[in-house]
Length: 145
Length: 394
Image (cartoon, rainbow over all chains, first blue to last red; front, side):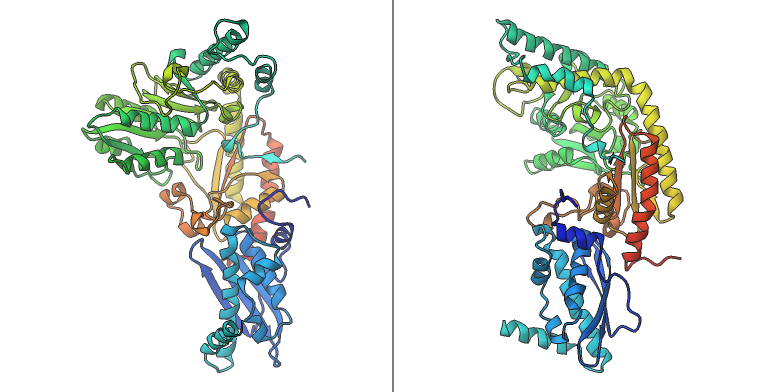
């Protein structure tokens, strides 16, 4: 496909052929996050096994090309990851994996990072733990970094 | 199938006769129209003079009342700033809340320099009531600016009624006719326009060629200080080829409007009816009765405009969106992305103005093109709805 638009070929590919679009019944963790600046909404479903590995990830997104591509790429990066590693998934990592986004569209990838965080909070809460576990893990990752 | 170009409000495909008329003036007829004493210059002068008459004829004006400019934005700036600069103690302007940026922003600029303004509210269809204008005009009102047709939602104002009010009140009436001129009747006299903007790119002429009509006796302060071109009102060497193209486009538009306006209106109505029948959550924006012949605009619940726009492009339909996400994609910062003020003014919720589309026809559009749009729309909308967390099919 010849690409004449503001997005890279890879972004266009994820926009037009989104990976892992859909829902997971009985998901281990679910989150819906919104981006107040543009009204975009992303819903993320995670299926996590007993070893703490993300077996499946699916999404639904109301948003622009960058939002849909970021969601799609995020689920690709999440599948097979350990929960601790999933929390290391920054928006920049998503942007890099997509081969870049226009500066005005970077915020779309932030939505995907937030969705991961919130879905994992939901996962821990369902497992009887406190959601703050995620904040602590995030803080530790930032410290180590 | 070749792509269906439905972004004509952003610029039409030049008529081949226009291009043909222009070519000599970017090749061998390169004289400066201000050089009157040799044939090369005189030839350019005559060409500009002819184009002035052709342009004037399109809007029922006299050639001496046409000032050539570079674009609609320049024409609007020139009228607004030029009138207000000479308005003395009258320092108030009236506009509508759906004016184009090239009207809104000059007004905001003047407001920062001590002028004040009133923005008239529009109804759900995007029309102002003449009564509200009557109330808004104050003793110190210097100018009223209203677009004949809105480029985003296609609504046309009752411009003659508005003009009558301005005449009765003795206020300068500036008509932004960029979206309508050349497509539907624009008669500066009937409108009682004191000034009027038009642009060639909207009626099969070239980009970079536009005009400002100034009614007899109207004085404005020029934007540029320079030489004596365009009676000193618009200094700067003339864009002769562009002006020739504008003139030719005006001549063709006047002669053929009677054929193409009804053709476009019929296809517009077919597209609107088809879209409405496909989804009950697809909503037409802009008054359906008072509407540009070429104009279709709508928004779809649950899905976002840039995604729609990108999918339509993939399916060979080139259109536009008023969504925040697609507003300024090359901006450096997300703060520069803004939902359309026009859509919010007609009550489209901000988080979904997002899902808006503008499809504007031209004289070249045929029924098969409209059929193509109606064929691909469900493919696109179904796909995006399936992806939308907000969508729950009843």
